[in-house]
Image (tube, rainbow, N blue to C red; front, side, top):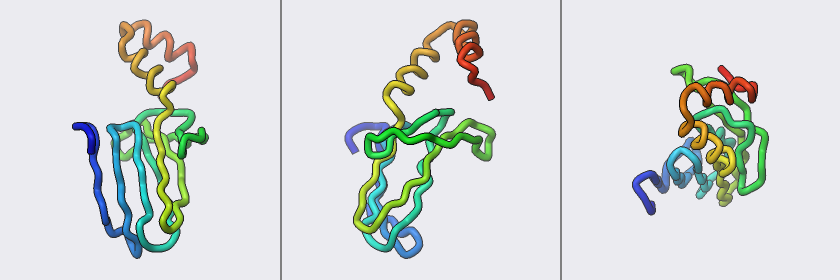
Length: 119
């Protein structure tokens, strides 16, 4: 890992497979299916996102809530033997979220309402 917001696990047994996983903060996860058959991976990220990037190609994300009621977004990815797949948050969506967090609360709430976003 290159920074404090990164974590990497190698040779993790998952059922009959062995995988390598690398996280970069809350914005990117890379999964490599090092050994075993095809696996189905549900790549989940915090927040409500319209799209996620799978290997740099935009994919429509599903949204819901986790067990604690927080908004989450995900895509389901098939990862074949020996394949490495990367899922990340779109840079434009991430920048938009940072901008809204920097706004005064009243303006952020007004923008969220005018965009039609809410819980």
